[in-house]
Length: 233
Image (cartoon, rainbow, N blue to C red; front, top):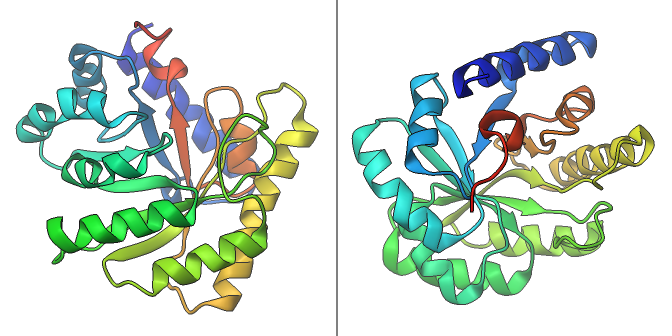
């Protein structure tokens, strides 16, 4: 299948999953995870109507997306990989949002960068919660996540828009649903704790589990292989 056909197939599956759970399909966004994909493949996805992409590394995003953004209005790029503090300022120059906000030290680094780089435009961030994948990063529990949220909210240069998680890589639905429910419940807890009308996004679900994630409340799914095929390094 072509990239366009894969995207159409995924959108159909997204709509069916939303309908099964009584949700509006229009409230769920599709992100193309373009790690290791060349500009040509990304152009194919753009031509198929996809405008939201996620990258894992600052350097790779710097190499591919400035020219793509110049040629395609409305293109949006999110940082979804682990972000090193010493690359925070560089990330601000290429990414529209950071989803992988996983520790207080990174919040501090981003605050310093926002002051000098984008003081007139708040940086959208999602806080990452560890919900079951042993090898992945994220705030380890709700208490630390809440303290991190307080730190984000104390600085107007950052806009907290939601949460993100990496579920266990498994075909067993039970741990997947447990992971997704944990993120959903964490968002509801933060909503009760803080007056945040924009705290809406739940970034969860990938190629192998996005339908389950949608059934559990995801508003943004991150799809790589199911759109682009196997990664080319």
